Amino acid sequence: MSFVKDNFIYVLMLALLVVFAYMDYRYLDLEFLAYTNGDEFMQYHSLLRMYEGIINLNIEDLFRFDSYVYGFVWHLLNLICVIPFYIIGNTEIAIFMPRFLSGVFSVLCLFMIFKISRLFLNYFYSYGIVFIVILMSGFYIEGYIFKPNVFQALLLLVSSYFLLKDNFHFKKNFYLGVLFFGLSVGAAKIQAIMFLPLIYLYIGVVFLRNPNINNLKFIIKYGIFSTLAIIAIFIITNPYILHPRGFSAWWWLFIHNMQSNATNHGSYIDVSLYDKLFDVIDFYYFEIFVFVIFVSFCLFFIYQFFKNSNKDLDIFFPIIASVAISFLYLFFFVNKAWSGYYVSSIYLGVLAFIPFFILFQYRKTLLIVVLLLQMGGGSTK
Image 1 (cartoon, rainbow, N blue to C red):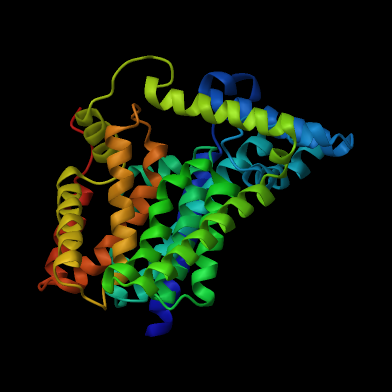
Image 2 (cartoon, rainbow, N blue to C red):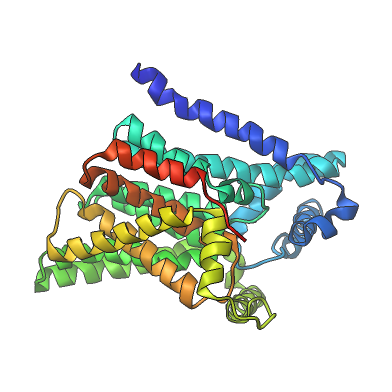
């Protein structure tokens, strides 16, 4: 029976890949791509330019992609997927493959959520948390879009998996956690830097548990190591940044992106908190009542951490607190209502349901209520 329970996740992943393949195999006409998905049109030509850089042995063209706030590794993975179809001149499949790659990253996110849940919960609750994500419309939309948002979320989930396994021992799993966090910033998207509190809070818990000079020295040492490691990983995965022109291009686009966050992509229209809650959270991710449950528990958990430390569940504090910080940033400091910005916060956020189901009685009832509410989700607008 455990064999069936262990392997059902793979059946689920395969079924969802079929769904993504069906979704992706539409609107594949290159001549209309600029009208159906403008960003995808630019990314297509960006990959084509990189491909021409390879066949012409022009390293400058290899690094002349569309967006430097996206990691070079993410561009490279997409390029590997499309090169065979550029060679044979099949533009339709060259458009299809990057979309499908986003779908692959999405189902891998589900796999990591399941693996993390299984560290603490039985199959029933682990699959329940997986289905909370499957019931999100944003799971399908973000798994279709040709952007690195889901790839970033996947790397952050892998980082969290290793940190949870390390459980404040600061051994091999800790270093793997830092490695994959660095990859989320360097290989996927610079936006992952907003989850830096995940690493610092993980290290800081040692001092919060027992504030003394030795532990202070300990967290300073590991804090410096983690910072330097993340910077090094970013440079290694984006080597063009070592060239003055490459750094100038990256810096200009980074500043432009920050300005875009403040001006709502140049529209100068203020996006309200209500818009973000109902046009993003409720429409794409959590049904609003589920989000209220989620936020309430996160606040309760953080309060309990400082009031009465629970060594068995303290390991979730860095994740829950960093997710809370990311939502504060997105809600109050980013003037956009773009669903892609929230993917990592949501996928890391669902991990809060693990201590939620551990702590409270009548857990099966709670899980069923959450799933029923999530099934009824969707904006009323």
